[in-house]
Length: 446
Image 1 (cartoon, helix red, strand yellow):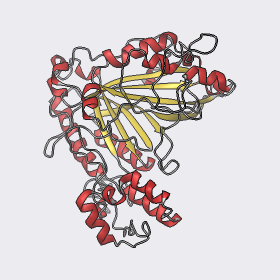
Image 2: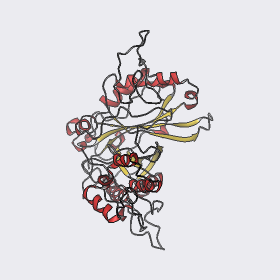
Image 3: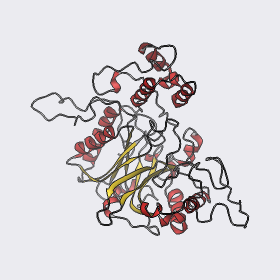
Image 4: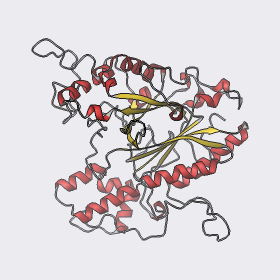
């Protein structure tokens, strides 16, 4: 399993300027620790060793060692953490979800494979620089040339920036001579019952998922990738997303969606290498050698009928999910992570967890995938006057047909949640394996 856990030394290269980084650990402990000591510990095992990651932070908080100022320092250290770009697997898949998402779908405008290859080489170099907190290019100070970096991330930390690349089924049409390399079962999703897909939120030759703990850092990455692509690719659609931030919830609990329920409780453990191999990472014998170590992404823009949901009684809401809103526990249980007891019945003999509840249907066949969903809002729908808001659902798996499609067919047919949601956007992307130093994204395919 790829090690995407934060652990890079928080040196000045993680900040896009020469600003003096404050001593990040001073005040965290009753005994003062100098920046030199912080860097020493970070050099041994990353700043996580010093702080024990969020767990260490929680321990310190529990011991009432943290003052408001030290909490600010902790937040600053966290924002300086750098996720390595070069690795066995692409970052942004099993990486713990950052606070913000900026997702872009691109269409290629060239018929030249060499130009496509060049684009991925340029994107690889740029993504490597941006995820390490460096400015792009070398003309940022010339008075006679446009700056090579758009500049809005100057002075900001890396904010755990990750950039994940994939290609859609249309990438394998006749333009580039790669049709024979398309995985056999890799196609656009079939139409599901209740779908109301809008062309402006569907498809794309290339999908780029950008996540960061700062939206401006995320937007900067997408903007510069789009700028680099000019003449070769154009943006087809873009979706921003958010979830509760690590500042608002230092415990890192399961995020809640805009319907108020915890979303992602059943996610597999990303630290379990065997589980990730069984659920997430594609293998050569899954249909394409070049996807060994990659993963297949499904993206769905799911609009929520918030105004209707808000008028529903809590009991109906909990019956819809099959879980309690407060705790996230399955109905009949007290713990959020308790297994669903699908045989439990109430005093009248009815199943405690309704047969058409979302959680029951999602667990019936034991199908697992790795969810990475974000909430979104597009303001007000000018036609209806209602909120345009919902969930930008992303999931990763090694086989879309056996995992997402099998589950979604069941959910689309009878999920009680369908009364309150409608799928308006859809796309799938084959996300490449990670890239080694000296290589480039997609080099296993090209």
